[in-house]
Length: 518
Image 1 (cartoon, one colour):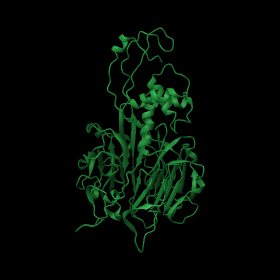
Image 2 (cartoon, helix red, strand yellow):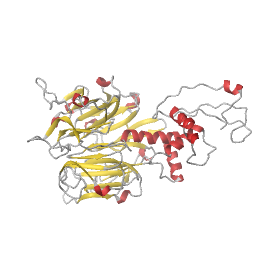
Image 3 (cartoon, helix red, strand yellow):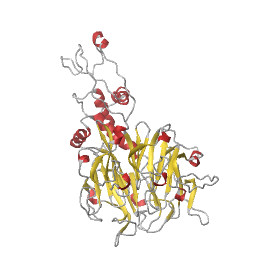
Image 4 (spheres, rainbow, N blue to C red):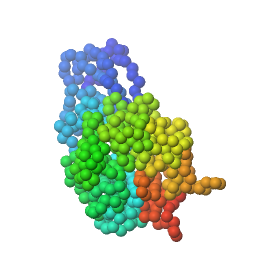
């Protein structure tokens, strides 16, 4: 493109305030100006030179894009920023395998712009930690995924959920050797069940092959002790899995949500059997709205949607305790938009579903919680239920980047790497190990408190994961930027990844798990 213009044209160029935020909304193309000189592609008529609204794209275009051959033939219909956004999309793992037709359909689903496609992909990478190390504190067992895609499991193994070909417990992290050559990018844990998602969009499952109300309630369930490819999903490119107590949900790279095994009462808009292995597209408004993250609670599902107009959250399932966020306790068979975020002027970027309560981190760093407030898990200083999202006022001076929820427990990670927790103190899973007069480490916490035991590790925490099940004592993982993993809480089945001394069944102070996830 000819970067020169006449002096008259240069003087008429409007100035624009450009916001440097990879997740910012991409605004419409700025008004173009007429150029008197010849267009770069040889047209005699004046062309357009639209300014981009995202400087990360501009910098990529000017500093990187033109220094090497492009990954695609020239497209005279695209602006410089659109070409740069397409080039950046090509470097993303989920975009590379797409055919040209799939890419065009993906583009239209995201809003008709490559900048919006890039924004969708980056939003999913940020909130789900795709392509990064992860630690999952499941019900009685644990999963650790390295940056390179290797998977370690440890803890309870009554249903083969560790994937090692046996039913023996593991008290130390052990790599799943049958996955050699397969790179895993995301993991999910449920009671007696594990699911893994590969960088090729394939899903592997092991443990119980059906769902009951508790781990041992499903009579006659077959157990699978090594990872098996989920055949019913082999034609759908999956990027995330989430396991609730009665169902499983998966998210495709195009932002479609599919569910399994909810039961025969149509709580997710379709009728299935408890051991149904066929995926069902989640009916309703999300059929036409791309989703970047899903989160499964005990009996409900949250979906973080990404639209050209902004980010939003939808909920579906059981409304008991107000956890669907609509101002009532009514069940929802189809996904329904949680409207309160608009009233609060919050654009959600991370969503977490606990057993009975939920939480969101906004783009501005504010934290909202709602649902059943038992033990203070909402962080509002009481145990009241909240049927719509409410800002945690005691965290207004903290810029949050991550939130995790469990069974009446909540953790928040700040942009400085500090960790705050509140809710049920059972099993020492909150990390407040200091015993003070009249209190102990099992005390419930009604308002957010800094987890000083993690602060003393002198590590910057990037992710928290805690047990999200009402049938297991909770344990908690803290994963640092450097790839170190710390564990505390219940450890009676080896789920902490370290041996407990004497007759101990839990650990109140974070201890390093001997595994490098970097």
